[in-house]
Image 1 (cartoon, rainbow, N blue to C red):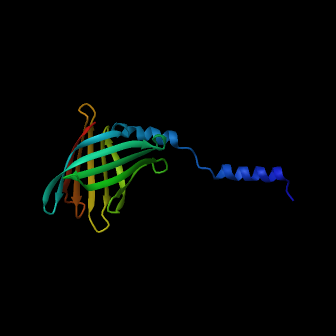
Image 2 (tube, rainbow, N blue to C red):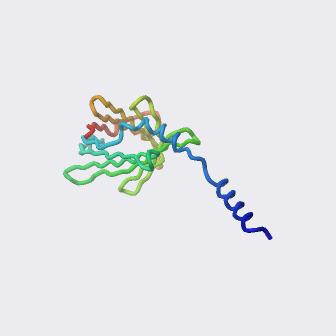
Length: 173
């Protein structure tokens, strides 16, 4: 029979071996590239619908979570004081794949696992495949000097032909 100290050493060794590495410094460093997004934004979005374009009052609330390892984004669109759009997205950096991850959820119960790329300083692209067919992509351009956020969204039924789906102009509050 093994002694209690030997069993304790074995248990502690197993716990230490099972722990994952701390990548927080790497993740925080990569996430810093999204730093200007943090805050509150307000403006208009023109959404292309089957019945023609509609304009909504759009807000974005963005904050760091988990000590800067995660960026939480909540977008809300209103028309005539009624919420017509509401989504939450989580962006993080995956140190294993060395890529950003973007997961979003809508008030209708939909969710996406999207790609997210930094194109250049304060310019990003994200998008996803639509389960029923087609693709969606968005390009976000932030201008810190003018405190603006410009986002242009496109839809493609085949990945080759793209049609504008949304244009959003926001100002940082």
